[in-house]
Length: 142
Length: 52
Image (cartoon, each protein chain N blue to C red):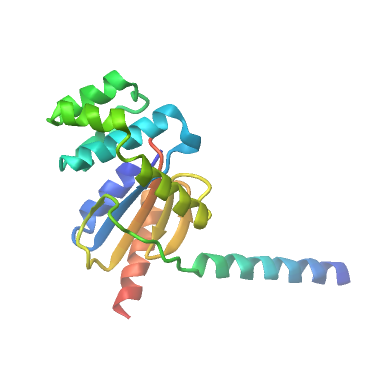
């Protein structure tokens, strides 16, 4: 699970200075892990990736089909489009590309962060992340 | 005494390796992955995550 609340807090504090990119890497093709990742990308097709992303963390471990459809309804998605995307596994290739990239970069657990290319494995506390961001901002100015 | 020196040297080498590793900057392709924040931001955070 990601340190999403920590990242959100830092994104708010450093507004305009950070670009956040997400690479979903479902663990070992676990059924629910894959479904949750597919649901986030399916929501992205309708311009609501982040709404689904946050719901998946807020409603952690509620990744059965019914719960994912409820999420989709709650954030106002076109349910037929969402269900079709899930049924056809529209974004399965994107997940495979993420997994291949993770393998290439030797990402062996989540979360793993690359901050301006530097690799940090596992959860980062607010203080740790803030320190890294401040150092990178200083480095960027030099 | 010699043994102590050897241990110290090995420890120093390990610390050096760890520092070197932490300094490495990887090139991580962004492609069309979900993202937020300005594309020209001074900081890019790429997070590999799993929801479960």
